[in-house]
Image 1 (cartoon, rainbow, N blue to C red):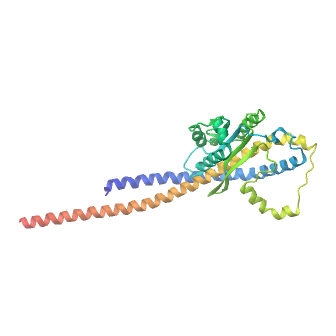
Image 2 (cartoon, rainbow, N blue to C red):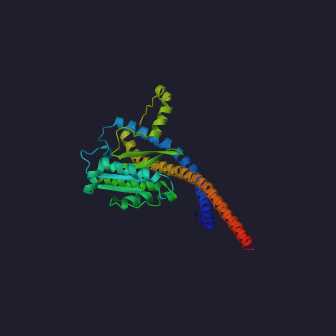
Image 3 (tube, helix red, strand yellow):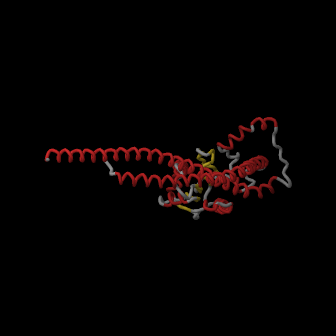
Length: 308
């Protein structure tokens, strides 16, 4: 059995850890509120932009723009993986990395073996994970979530578009965690290039579409494009791509803060249970020590009485 001093030290250590986890939970909750505000402001614009793009593509020939053209053969691919910069967020980072690895195994394994698969990892965890495993990483976006800005999305999309135009890769996908609610996320592998024929629908988007189903049945959007659909498309495509990636970054940021808040709340609760167990163990050890001392005193007194 551990000594009283050892148990007291463990109790003190657990209390200190609990203070840290409680503080981290409060910080994550504050960051989550800000992240939710940003994503809730961005989603409607990004979704509507995608809807307008779909209307434009229906009016134009599929070969009207270079970024519409799918390649007959995929000889190279770029995968953008969005993770966090820090841990202590439950399975948040592991889920994104696992989905990226599954996507590679299912779709790009031959390209990876041939050296034609490229990765852009936004966030330290993904960058370090794939960097240690010999993947070809482009750019260094570690620490991007320390001060997340739209410039990051623009910089990444510039690399993606330039490589696509130069035939360095024929497909671009982004893997990220979509914010569903505080306690859960959706794992998403979303195609970016070539621009898909139909708007990509995430589970959150699908819920919103179902929510507005009655309105959709009685009202149909009918757009008039001026000066013409082709000119508008030239302006909208870069904005659309930038905002799709920007939305993915905001989704991931909100999902990370929610996952961290839940993880730290669970850690704080587990510390409470561990403290109760340690205090019970401490009381039992203390009672055993007192009992032993009493027995020793009684035994000594009895020996003195017999000797006298």
